[in-house]
Image (cartoon, rainbow over all chains, first blue to last red; front, side, top):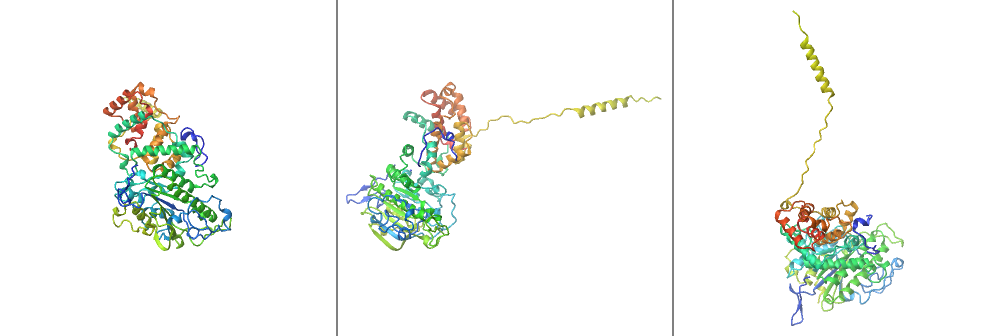
Length: 438
Length: 167
């Protein structure tokens, strides 16, 4: 997202080489918070997939020192053998997330291949991918977005559900499934900021034809006339989620504002940590923060995968763990400083899977051997953290026994947002992580 | 009795003439052509939604009058994939195309000089069919009655309408 070139005419000339209808909650005379659908613990959930394959050894167990000082309580220095490869990011401000959370220290990605897309699909559908998984098709089981939009009462619009991915490939398809009765109609808004809010994106999409309000009325009148004489609509092919017209205008304004900010250089170092420290994970989370601030969605999922460099560079994996730690800490600070979401949001943080115990043969500049993830026991060991305000989430609680697994995240989100009981029986094999809540 | 050889001579001459005539005749090159026919599709037959690549390629050709390069198609496809609401991103894409200095639309003056022809040609270009009488009359009237209506507004409305997404 850095180093935008000045705006030019449309793409051809560039000669390039190559997500509001918020269900209004109300306070009963008792002071307890309810929402229109069912009992809610909070009105917003942000799920940050700390993905790319994170071992408990380097994260929650702090085996190489305190690489994640914003997330976990710990004061040990970074292992001297890798310390020169860790960039000096500033320490996150405020309390650690752990102090405001319940930490499931021995969470499990119990079944299915330890592949990134398998792990993402499991975390977002609440079902393990035990059958062949097509990376060219949406998931077969409904996603958490579809459960949320379909089973909330009233039904929620797409502006309230966002999936912010760090990558394209198969990941755009995770915003809705092919499950009968669910699908695109209940899908989430999807955005992959690294591609969209880029130099390419700015050149192609940041300079739209401007129409006055009167002209837009005429255009809408014309379009209605054209649509009246054609019996099919875009919603019938089921290939895309659809926003309400009024929400589309809001999203287009948001995109335009984001392009303008990016073109002015305002996204090169959005957190003022130094542009040289920003990586794709940090940019992705900063884009999610813009959506949080703009739309205050009830359900937002954002991922990071920079740590997957561990296949070839262990020390850089540790460095990216540190950056991802900073990003998720900043994400929580943004949530807690956004009116409408502060003290009414629960943040869930979990990797999609771990990495192998035994290294491969690739050594980095610090003599550290790289790690793959091929479904050994260690690659199934992950953590899960449920962060929230003290009246909703058990603070500074650590569950050290093997408790909880990846398929529990969707039912837990459904429980927080009050639609768990509306989901038909048998669709979600996991359980609610009740240990985390007051 | 004298036997005349005249018939034999005549037959011989005819044979020689015929043989030489046939043997020396210049070969005719026949060129078989297909008569120009406007291929259109009735709107009721449009049941297939355009793919991402089809939408981008066709929109580009309709606005710029050029075939999109593979490189630009690749870039626009990535941008298209990077946002989930396809109708919304198509809308943004079309508005950006229409704002390009290289957009090749009929000018407003051309539109106003012969609205009937403009309506017919625009339907043929964007919907791949002629307008029916009601459509022709109505669009003609909407343009005539609204002096603020521009060619870009008509293109924008048609290219973001439901029919434009199908073939």
